[in-house]
Length: 303
Length: 299
Image 1: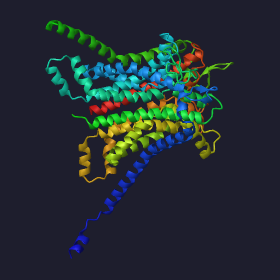
Image 2 (image 1 turned 60 degrees about the vertical axis):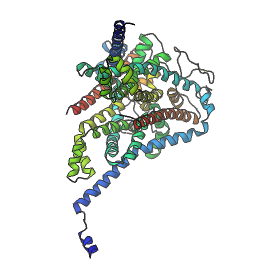
Image 3 (image 1 turned 90 degrees about the vertical axis):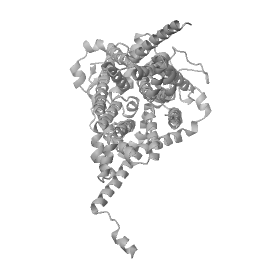
Image 4 (image 1 turned 90 degrees about the horizontal axis):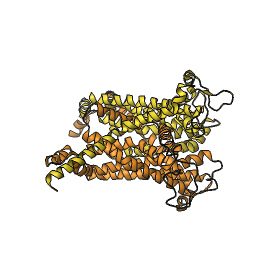
């Protein structure tokens, strides 16, 4: 008896509601497919590159220098060049970027001047990499007379990464609660003492994450270093750690990939694939590291 | 140290540090003007004496090293940049906004983190690797699928650029959707709407400005991209008539020819003038995006 009543009185969606729900399901699937259309290529591309590079990937490939007009050997010289460029450019960009962010977050008032600075940061971030290359060539190589060198290329890269470091540092500083600063001021500390002993220690991990992310971006850039310091080929001893001087030109992984895949004929197929995988692997690894750090920090956040 | 001298020392440090910080604070302004000044400086000589500005903008004939008559017309290069960017946006905008909606509204929290990280990794792939993919993966694929003799063309470049600019559109678009107040969602859900109706009737209109800014930033990225289009679009300075035509973009022209142009020559200076053109285009696009975002915040 009661079962029959329940059966007849059970809620049934009207035709309108059914249509509505069907529509929602379809929309969900369409959006999921659109998302998959971005994730699938990433996986497919990485798998394809690794598959082709597999035969050549070994420690020797990393520590050997290119031979026979870059048609044989390994990638030590470009690898070392990339390390030099990344370290030097971040050593220049990080302090300036962090201090600029300190200015924007701790000192600047909300006025037209601050708005102009913010606008400049946004636009600096949007300048095409090839225009950075032109600037580096015009300003550092020609005007400052540094010549095509690691220093000129690193300066160019530093200016390119600066706005992103400013943005990420600003975010890290802004996440430190205002009450921390107020407490510090109340015991008589100056503005800088507060920043130095309270704000920076509490945001250092966020700042670091932003800087690490820039390692991968700097390592992958090609256009800005093409005309400011990177060369097609430079002879080095295999495994030499101090192969380049500050005013030398250098090879770089990204540039090397461009060279052997477009400029040099008859390169064995595995060589460019190997270079691409090492470059991609480095970049993705560094990114993964930064993401892990960020997730870890978010988990143990105390305020 | 007496208290007085300590206070003095503190004061000196304070002033010194503060001026250093203020100096770094304006570094962004210095560099933006620095870029404009130095790029302009290298190209100015020819811009004001010698360059036929009308021919520069209206002629598709780019013969910078011609023996008989040198011609500097960038119309074909602008068309190349335009064609590749337009195709990229045609693909990236619907997919990017679709993915932003999915990540922000449809998928479960556990998937959400994973997808956001994947998109972040997609954004991290260096442009030269994208170019290499265009050369080795897309090129043969397009030749087989469409039966054309060469696969380095607008379609190839457009696909690569779409994949490159989609992460920006997704992450900024997702921010825009997140910024819609929850009370909007609650009000709509209380009326019994489905999630699709919520997205279509409430969230997309409310996040319109943010999404537009996301698209503009994607355009800025696509216009300024160099290595990928240099390697994937072929090297034909022609007005494209179909997506199977090879083209060359403004950025690729600078990258391809700057190494060979003698320093200070007309050709060299014209390449810097193209740089000014690129700077201006991306400046306007980014400025527009920024103003739109700011407008949204104020509203």
